[in-house]
Structure formats: structure tokens, C-alpha cells
Length: 310
Image (cartoon, rainbow, N blue to C red; front, side):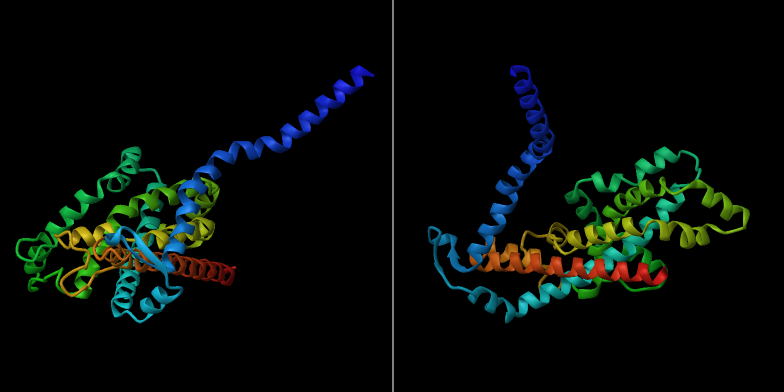
């Protein structure tokens, strides 16, 4: 009888261990996420419903949706939203297309292939401050190399910081330069799983590199393309350091006429320059909802394109 009870107890403990162990293994992540992710997110939502002034010893009082109502009627917010979407489109689309092509080239036999693969990642590990300062000099109005090249082709100098379209192009080039190699390595890792006999058959049929990319690589990489699109969308809508440093000053207005102020910069301005923490929190939550909407729209669009091609 005692032996039977011991066996039953061991079996019960074994079943409990089998069921509970996976949850215990992932519990540290959820505890850290709750402390440093979920709690700040919920607390920011609470702050957004208050008129919170840090200069007045953190005095605050409940105002409900007043901050959101003011935000929707604020022309500076809509200007920042337009700038953010413009820079996001100009940086994300060329970035992903270039990353896909680079990964396709690196997937073939090349000399010093390992060194080339490591080289495409170097822009991503470089300090964002150093990268932006270098690009700011390249796009300088008087002595920038970009204007020097334009002068060789007979074009006049461009004041890249003064105009909306030129500043967006310059900032987008910084973002694309930093993240193209990173996305290329993600594409390359997925390409390694594509059966090699598909490319061998395409070579026998006389398919060019471009045809192999369109007919074989892209259809096989649909899940990875969706993933990189979502990640690039989330990162692109939160850009802050590039436009802040590109202005060659520490003012978060994004130029003299706010021509390249993004939503993240606008939020930083309201929170840490105007000290309106309630209003800045409302901007943060609006940005969060915007990212969710755009990410879901991207996901549905890419899935629809994939289904149409099937």
C-alpha cells in the first residue's frame, strides 16, 4: 500500500512538473515585462487623462479626454504626423527593396562572402549619433559632399534642412543606410532555407538573377517580408534621434518651421521642454494606436497581395 501511494505521488509530481515547468521558465520574462513594459504603458494612459505639470511639483488634476481633444485640433500634431508618415514611406520602401536584392546577391557564391555578410551589418552597429553627424555634414548646404556632386551635374546647391521634401529625403537616407543591412541579413537567413534545387533548375532553364528573385525567392520569403515590413513600420513611426540630430541643435522643433518634426519629437517637446506631461502622454498613446493601425493595415495588405499571387 505504501509503495502504491509513493508511486501515485511521484506520478502526480511528474504530471505537475510537466505542466508547470514551461510556465515557470517563461515567468521571468513576463515579470520583467509587467514591471518595465505593461506598468509604464498603463501609467502613461492614466497620466494622459490628467493636466500634469512637472514644474508645479508634479501637481495634476483629472481632465478626462481634454488632452486628446486638444491634440486632434493642434496643427503642430497634424504637421508632425504628416512628416512622420512621409519619412517612414521614403525610408521603408527603398530600404526593404534594397535589402532583398542585397540578400539575393549574398546568397550566391561570391569571393569573401563571409566578409561581405559581416560588412552589411556594420552600419547597424555604428552609433546613431556618429552616423547622423556624418550624414548632416554630407548634406551640408555650403560644404556638403552631396551638393558638390550635384554641382558636378550642373544642379544648384540645396539647403537640405530648410525645405520639407529635402529634409525628409536626407533623414530617410540616414535611416535606410542604417537598417538596410540588418534587414538584408534577415532575408538572407530565410533564403538559406529555400531548397537549392529550385535555383539549379532555374539555371538550367536559363533564368536570370532577376527572374530567380521574382519567381523563386520572393514567393518563398512572404512570411519574412511581412515580418520585416511590420518591424520597419514600428521603428519608422517612432523615429526621433535622426531628425533631432539632423537639426544641428538640441531643439526638438524639427527645423525652424517644423518641417521635419516627427510625432516622437513633438512628444519630447511637449513633455521635456513644455513640461506638459499629460499632453505628452496623450501624444504617446495616440502614436501607439497609430502604430497598431498601420501595422495591421500592412499585415492585411501584404497577406492580400500574397493570396492574390497564389
